[in-house]
Image (cartoon, rainbow, N blue to C red; front, side):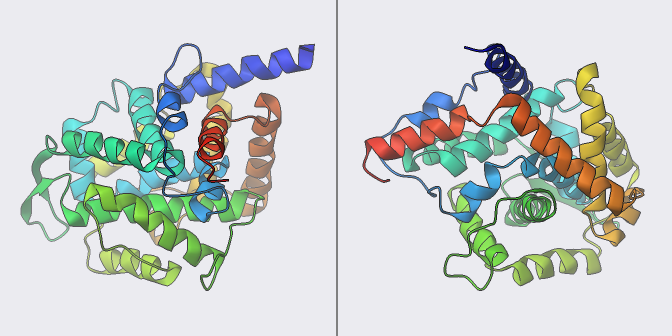
Length: 307
């Protein structure tokens, strides 16, 4: 192995360790994705596979957390039951596990992962105050909360990919690549109990706009506190300059009305967009093209004759 390959391997391990929490850089859910004797929800030519394998998700994940903070129900669930302040990377790893298993895993793995998440959701209950100053009870598996978390993630990953990634999204049989992604990724939340989701970009955008116009989405002191934490999480010192650029990219990609609600100001697009694209490509070059998760999924699909 050359010195360049050794450096790539070292950086790759450090990168995967940061995202998964695994000391050796091997995600604990790698075996879950590689094992199994059946196909999954998606194959490499499907839109969710293409989007979620790309590093645009690094921006999309930050953006999704900012968007989710606008719903007082999902915000209450995070504040009341999440360990995000004490163990933000641990919570991040849990989210990444669900995303990657659902995207790249077998049907049996997706079912098991959904069961795990649903079991966790049963314990997430409480009360929150709506934008109309009404107190409501909530459960994490309430359809309206599941829908908001779903569309916040979905829109964020889609927008981030379109702005910062190079790989085209497959169009499939949909009217547009974006419509294909929205329809296909909607299947991912059926095992969580959410069976009615947007089937096109317009439906997704209309869902978000309606929540905003109906004043379901609000900004409170708790919102601003969470935004402050997302802006400056306790990351390793060496990672912070890169994270600041990714955060700026997430802010630039948001609708102006949501930036205003969150108290965020976008930096110049002419600077942020090309800089973010450069950094994401530099990360890919630095850690190398290999992805243990995707390689495990591809090996499983070849083994069962699905490719």
